[in-house]
Image (cartoon, rainbow, N blue to C red; front, side, top):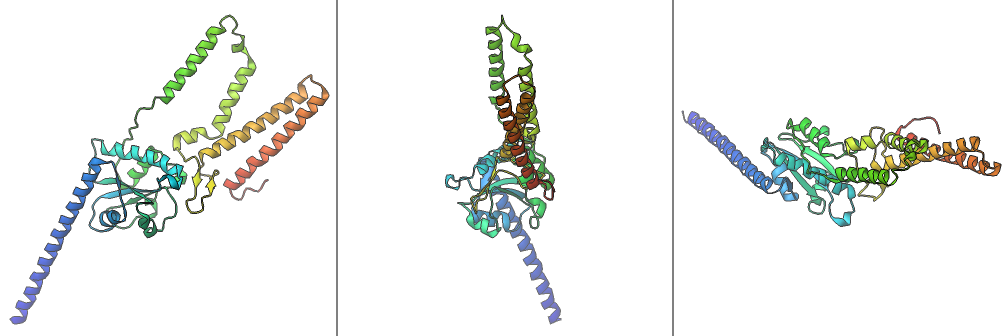
Length: 323
């Protein structure tokens, strides 16, 4: 009988310990949620250092997701992409914080390198900006790291990624931007003033060269990838924080930088100018000497800039056989 009483006492102690652990875990989780909600009520993006990250993100218990932007915003870091991505990240976080669907399921946080370098070392990160989703249970998987170079850092793209990882759908609400309507208004006013000043001579409207140049500019802008930039919102360029090297051409065929589209636009424009010079050299009535110069300049532009276009193509589409 003595051994039975001892076993019963041990079982009772274990049950009491389990209940105490559960109660302690629930209390700790409640404290974490209260702390996170209090910070989120003051600022949509919670700034974290190493201590906060370990206590509120890494340490259990946790029943909420945390999306963290690892960045380097201090001026001495000279990370222009970090500041651009931070603007979009703030828009996303504020859209969630001030929406009617806001809950404690997802929180948005930020770890700056100069405030939490130990976190960067803990996660073996050597580049910024980086977005990582920390799920309520388990460690982050590969899909929990946002593909910034492929998808860009536009708030809408980040919202789709957050919805994929957390099943929380965020409607992005941007502050009003009057730059576009103002520029359109100034352009229409300029055209109106020009038409009024030349109301007695509107032959320029029927000038084929004017319309050809306008159409050519539109084609060059569209074929260089400007629409892709508008939809995806990629960074202008990428600077490696470790080496300081700046990349203007993306190494993948699935993505591009804004600077890359400008380079491609310039090269296409140069090739087009070369073709125009060749055409004028063959059909104009100028002196033979000037026509030869135009022909040589046209051939030089086409050969040089088209070869550079092929070089960019080879760099992005590995295995392309032609030079």
